[in-house]
Length: 316
Length: 79
Image (cartoon, rainbow over the protein chains, first blue to last red):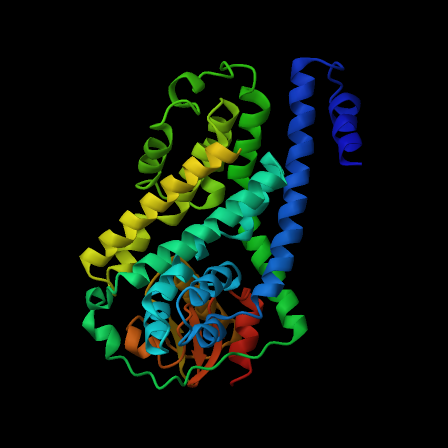
C-alpha cells in the first residue's frame, strides 16, 4: 500500500516520467521516508510504554548484589529498557554503587544504554533490513556484557573516587506511581520529542541513499577499505571514538559508507564507536571515576568494538 | 510553597526549569524556583534527573519529560 502511494505521488501528482532516474529516486525517497517514520513512531511509542515499567530505581534493585556474569547479562538487557538522561549518569552511578551493584555490572549497564536503543535498531532495520538491525543489537549487548565483565574481573574499585563510597542517601528514594493513562501520555510526548530531534538526520540519510546513489562509483571505497583490508575496522573505530553523536546523527554517514561499498561489519563497528564512547560522557563520568579507570574503560571498549567489527566481516 | 528542579545542568534540566517557571507564572503564584545541582541534595530525592520537587514531594523524575500542561498540573496539585 505504501509502495502504491509513493508511486502515485511520484507519477500521478508530480507527473514525473515513468522509469526515469529522477522518478525512481523520488519514489524511493517517498516510500522510505514514510516507512521509516511509521516504524519509528510505532516502535518508540511501544518501547516508551515498556520503559515506564523499568525506572532506574527498579533496575538498581534488580541488579543489587547480583553475581558477576549473570549480573552483566541482566545489566546489559536492562540498559536497553531503562530510560535515563545522560545528565543523571553520576547520581545513577553513585546510586548503583551504594545499592551494592558490582562495578563491572554497573559498567555493562552504562555501555549498553547509549549504544543499543530502539532508535538505533529501528533506523538500521528501516534502512538496511532486520538482519543488520538484529546483528547490531546482539553484538552491542555482547560488547556491553563482556566489556563490563572484564572491568569487573580487573578489580578496579580503587580507581573509583573515594567520596562515592561515602554516600549515604538512606535509599529513601521513591518510584512515582503512574496510571496506565499517564504512561500512554508520557509515551506520546516522548515519541514526539524524539521524532523532533531525529527527523532531519533521517531525511538526509534517505536523501543520500536515493539521490547520491548513481553519482559516486559503487566501489569507490572498497579499494581502500573493503573486506580485504585488515586495517579497515581499526581505522573506522579509531575515527569513530572521538566523534560523538546519537544513532540518528551518525546515520547519514553510515548510509553513505555502506552505499559506497564499505563492508557492513566495518560500518557497524564505526557506528558503535561513535555512539558508545563520547567525550561529554567521559567528562561526566570523570566526576566519579579516576583517570586510569576511564582509560581502561575507553581501551576495553575500543578493543571489543574492533573485535566485533572483524566478526561481522567474517559472518556477513 | 517551594519548588525545586533537580539536575546537574543539562539541556533536559533547563527545559524542566523553564516549564516550571512558565507554570508558576500561568498559575499566578509567587514562588521562586530553586535549581538544585548538588549531587548529595539531588540524591535525597532521586537518582534520575531531571527531577521536580514540590513542597518536599518528588513529583517527577527522569526521562521522558512531562509536557508543559502536565508540569502545571503537578504543581497545582500541591497548592
